[in-house]
Structure formats: structure tokens, C-alpha cells
Length: 425
Image (cartoon, helix red, strand yellow):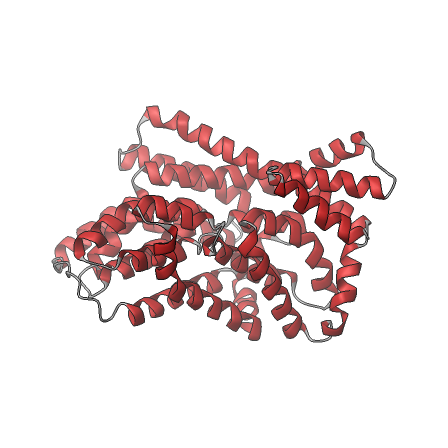
């Protein structure tokens, strides 16, 4: 009964077009009324408690760093660096897109922002060179979803807060899976694009390559500084976010000179607006999570999955399949916020490492950003590439499949995540 009220109240509110944060509040109210404990004071206090979390301070600063990175010319230099070294290879612009996606993912943490930046810079070049544009746009879309996986990942911060899991460990554990996603895209691209007859960019002289690399050096060391600082214990994830924002501002304004003073205020406003939406979502999700636990919904779900509790790998496959199915109907944030409090008790009961589960859960949700009909990254790339959704979907399947293969391997071989985590920590 409780689980039915939870599902129908949430889906009913969303079906009426209610934003997910308010749908979660409606769901919480329904659960409170079912338990005979509805109290607006408790509801408002729990929402405030949900937003009152120190780790959440990392979110506005990482978002600000991403905005400053794009406005200050850092993204452009990352693309120029990749063009200088691999742009002359057959299919080189696709390889450039993958390299740039991985580097930018290790800075911004935003799939939509990275996909938009790469689409606007590379799609015109690919179109001019004769590349298959739906396939190229599919590659850029799939490359964009590496951002929620590689640190610094805003999604990892959200999951860490909701699930009470170490954000630092999540960051370190996600490095290898994120890089494997990039490798899988490279393999898929080399397979599907090998027969394309496209114009090959002229090979850049070695001297000029080093000039471009030197110009891009400050952009390239940014992700190394973020991850290296956390690895050595110099900074926490929150402090790393502040340092990243300051670094992006100083480099974009005073070194590259591309960030203008009149851009700063709109950038701050955009980062603040996005942060407000995310933090409000988290706060309402934590209220629902508290009531989900109090209403024994995890126990009900656990009873359904009890036959698989003694087989962690099979249980992981079932949970990942559930997330894939839900991800085709819901966007990243609702899936993350709704399923985390439901699945985490089952994960702990089965003896699965919460950090390991968190990395795979986020990766699965990230892939959901390129599944129709609600994949936000698909809509962003469609707009930038001037494509219809049906055209883009024809080009994205090889790359989505490649990333799902990585997810399958990580479920089958947990040591791929856990062994590097032990070394990095």
C-alpha cells in the first residue's frame, strides 16, 4: 500500500506537469498523510535540513567554473590542443571530440554544457569536411555524458549527500570508469567511421603543435590540479571547487584575456539559478527519502529482491536494468533523487560497496541522458547541430551501446572500480 501511494502520487504529480521538486513534496505529503503524521512544520524543517549541507557548497563553484571555462577560452584551447595532435588522422575530428570531451568532463562536470560547447565548435568543421553529421552528433552526445562520471562530478556530490557516501571516494573511484567510457567511444568511432570518405586536415608542423600545446597548457593542467589536490589530501571536494572557479576566472580574464567584465555578472546569475534548482531538488529529495525510509518502502522492495540478495552481481544486473528502464522515461535528476533512497538499503544489505554502486548508478543515469524521449543532451546537440531527433538517434546507437558494454563489464568485474580506488585513496 505504501509503495503504491509513493509511486502513484509521484507519477501523478509529474503527469500533471508539476516540476520534479514539487512532485517530490506532493509525494512526501501523501506519505505523511498515509502515516497520520502530516505536519507542515516538520515538512519545512526537513526541507531546510536537506539544503543545510556543507558538501553542497561544491555545486555552485563547479558550475561557476564550467561557465567561466567556456567564456574564458579554456574550452576552445582544449579543442585546439586535440586538433593539433590528432586532427590530421583519418576520422581525426571524431578523435578530437572524444579527447576534448574527456578533458572538459574533468573540469566542468556538466554533460549538457560540454555537449553544447563541443557541438558548436566541432559540428561546423565536421560538416565542412564531409563527416556523417548524425553519427558525429551522436559521438559528441555520448562524449558529453562522461562529464557526470569523471570528477569533479556534480552528480557524484548529489549522490554522496543523499546516500551519505564519501564524495572524495566517489571521485577517485569514478576516474577509471570515466576513462573507459572514453576508450569505448574511441573504439566504436574507429569501427563505424573507418570507411567514411572525409577531408583530412593538413598535418600541423611539429613546432606549431608545441606552440598550441603551450597556449593550452593552463587549460590542460586544470583537471590535474583538481584531482591531484584531492588525491594528495591538500583540498576537499568543496575546496577544490572553489579553487577551480578562481583558477578559471584568473586564467580566462588575466592570461587569455577572453573573459570580459560585462560577462561576469550574467555568469554569476546563471550559476546561481542552476544551483538554486539543484539544491532545492536535493532538499525535497531528502524529505522524500526520510519518509521512504520511515514508511518501510526499502523493506518492501528488498522483500521483492530477496531471492537475489545472496548474489551481488546478479542483484547489480537487476538494479542496473531497472535504472536503464526508468532512465528512458525520467531525466537524470528525478531518477537519481527517487531511486537512491530506495536502492541504498538493499545495496548495504547485500554487502555491495556503496561507493562502487554509486559510480555505476551515476554512469547508468548519465547514459540515460542520451536515451529518448527525455534525454536532455540529445535535445542540446539537436539544437546545436540543427538536426531532427530522429536523425540523431540513427547516429547515436553505436556509442550508446559501447558505453553500456563498459557498464556491463563493471558489473561483471567490480575490481575494475575497487582496485584503482584502493590505490588512489
